[in-house]
Image (cartoon, rainbow, N blue to C red; front, side, top):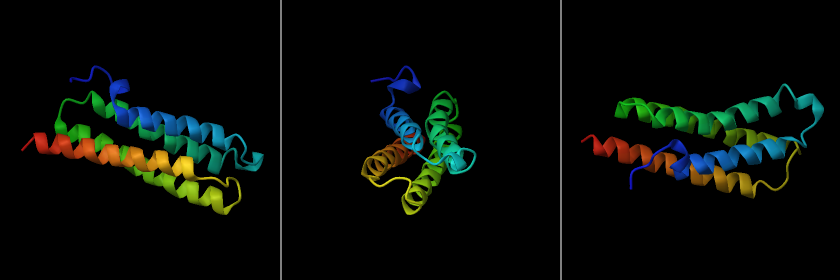
Length: 120
């Protein structure tokens, strides 16, 4: 089935769910983190879904995969922010964040591989 918009992609849907969860989670972070960890975490989470959306409409297959690779880099950045937030005592239960980030990463990898394999 042909996808019509990036919103139809399960990997984008999972990335968007993750972003929403990051926004709600960081609401409880200390005020002194507003321009530090909170801002960085939100920026990186937003970048995951945004790069999937941007890559979706790229014409060249390598260009598409490049944006998905950038998205995956932001995902790994968020993985660190989850660890840091936990270690600083800002969050306790990281299971939901980790589950969504792991699912999203697997989907990005699978989608990228499928695109690269369709080129051979």
